[in-house]
Image (tube, rainbow, N blue to C red; front, side, top):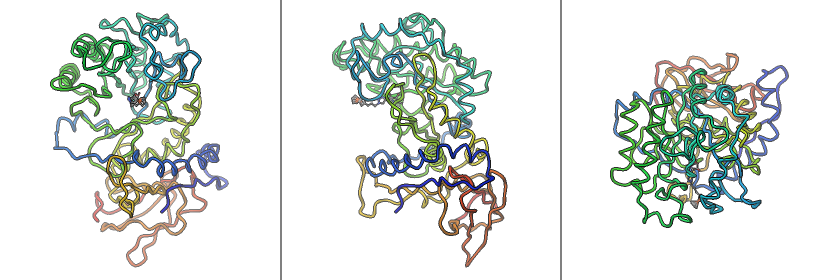
Length: 484
Ligand code: H79
């Protein structure tokens, strides 16, 4: 069973500019991709999470139309934590950059002093929007307030915000909303509804304020979280979605109060899967890609290195090849990929993140037809096989040995086979009842040799493979849907 993959470093002379660009990353890609194989073996739990089917809801389907088409979004984690960037008082603070206050148990009185130092003079909303567009991403989601309680927007509900508490004094969310409107890209807001380590009655800060079960949680919800969500839905134009997170203590009516606010103010705004009540789509665990396809709408929030908020010491970037694989893996299973960057305290998105995203973006410029608005695989056998010994992961789901040579996405009458590696023999198209009409490479429309032997349809791909990062072959068939 193949669980690691190789990305060929060989490039045929005269292939496209795209191939030359991806070649630069070839050596790194092959090294990192082997690590993926290791991760699959080492932490199998991260690969399981089956999306459960839900009863149909036409209103929800309508709201989800753009989301199902979009497939790929930019997550931005930015806040005061970009200043310490993974350290506190000269000591390394382990884990996620945005968790530094928690991990180093920093008292509110100390942590909030960061606001007086937050002056991101290099912040330029149009540049961030341009990056997302160059990357081929169709929406942006930014932390309007993370667990540390600091808001990136002007708020009447709390002065602990970008405009009232920093020397920068600019409403960065307003600037980003305007830039998104200019650039024609959707904008959504992450909002930490439960944890708020700045507030005596918010969840999570036990070092300043004692145990959560002794707090007047509704005082925090009604006094800050609910008013701030209202502010986000009134002052920033159309909001694509609200991305709630870590639903602690969201019992009884509490999550529904947020749903009512969202529906009342902007009925088209999507609610993610972490409110504490049913949202419009399923959010998987952080960095968790489910093992199989689902017709439900779902999204994987994912890091490009190992942190969300900027850390100076995390240079372990996923390669463009790995990102492209994950994107196609997710789309072939029916989901969306929300990939994160963590800008610095100056307001700059780290250059490696930019380079990686733009490389994948150049690939999407040529091959995006296989991604945007594409449906999931009609097969499934290409995804991998459950452990023959019946091994289970920590959640109790079957452990899957992942296959990573190819993925398939669909549109009416078309199958898009994306190859991440060169098939060693003629590639057999999984059996379908529909007659196969023709096969061609998506990048340059060059015909791909297709023959039928004893009812088996075989593709003969050019060697070495056309684009060593990922080569898409379109197979056209009779009818609109695959019959098996
Ligand atoms: O915003 C990003 C993360 O900060 C947030 N979700 C993504 C999108 C997130 N919140 N909680 N978690 C992720 C899980 C956090 C787990 C840990 Fe811990 C934090 C492990 C160590 C510190 C909480 C505290 C669990 C153990 C100790």
